[in-house]
Image (tube, rainbow, N blue to C red; front, side, top):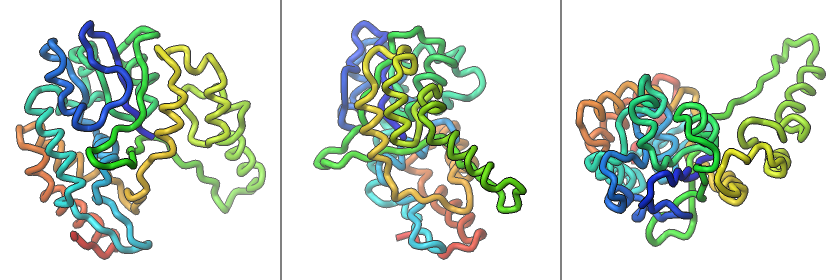
Length: 280
């Protein structure tokens, strides 16, 4: 799940608790420090944080074999327009957080990142080398006029056990223990997906000591607000984003202008995988 990860390292930084998206769009103008960043759109999973949280129907599964890909929907363009304005203001980078050289050249300039909860440990701590006590978290953001908050989902994985295993029960037991056991998950480096284990993780002071404040409420709220309208298809949602959108952004094209090409690429890949595609 995604949460707004905040880094109050700048003296006049406005990041306090939670922000609706219109406040996020003013983030660059509300700091007197040119060159500081409030996000990145350049990673292969950026669409899952930004577009999914906006409820953009890019991978809207209807049953098992029908996919709706409607990127001209207002819930897509509201986010693309917001990001375009921040990219233009040089407040959001088109270079990925995890791209080669970013941490060294720009990591110290990132004052805020909208993304998964594991950004705390693996982005700010490990990549950007931000000392403990400078990172906090806030719940997912809201849009004007909307009372329901939704967020994206980046990372995690699926454990599988082969039906051909000679030790099917033992293998299943291992997977169950790895994913649900408090004894294992309470010491996990980042927030667990399994709700009871997540509570055990939050109860362990060692897992949270890197953060500046209590992240429990923000993490728990975000976990309950992952938008389910972005389906798990038989192909990766990163392929078309990486091959069509990211090159366009780095060449200076706007995200909004790139939506039709991204839609076509998703639709073509979906049809090749046997989906019936609708774009409305």
